Image 1 (spheres, rainbow, N blue to C red):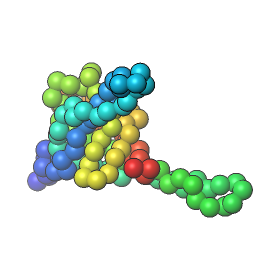
Image 2 (cartoon, rainbow, N blue to C red):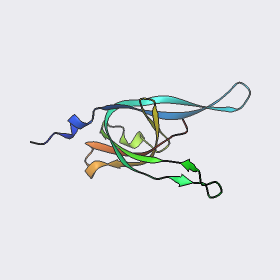
Image 3 (cartoon, helix red, strand yellow):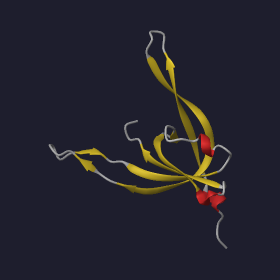
Image 4 (tube, helix red, strand yellow):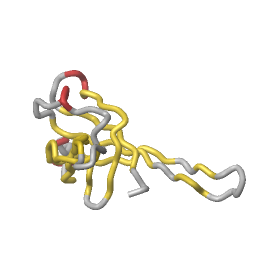
Length: 116
């Protein structure tokens, strides 16, 4: 007997919007607001290392992850300008896919933001 996909969505994640607002001196400030909190299956997909041509030192080490969440009617509202929070880690969404186009699960592909 196989374990259902629902049982594998055990990692609580938060999807956040980016909101641009005007500050008191006419500049702009970016704030983050919680869009939805969901449970997800988190799967590492790959990584690479990027080195400087001049120094040979590592300058980037991006890792790609896939997050599988249950469809909750918000698929069209989720976009690549959002980010995912998982504990203290931050991930930038790069791709959104509706599994089998049947509105049961959504796959979010994201790159870990190591600058935060």
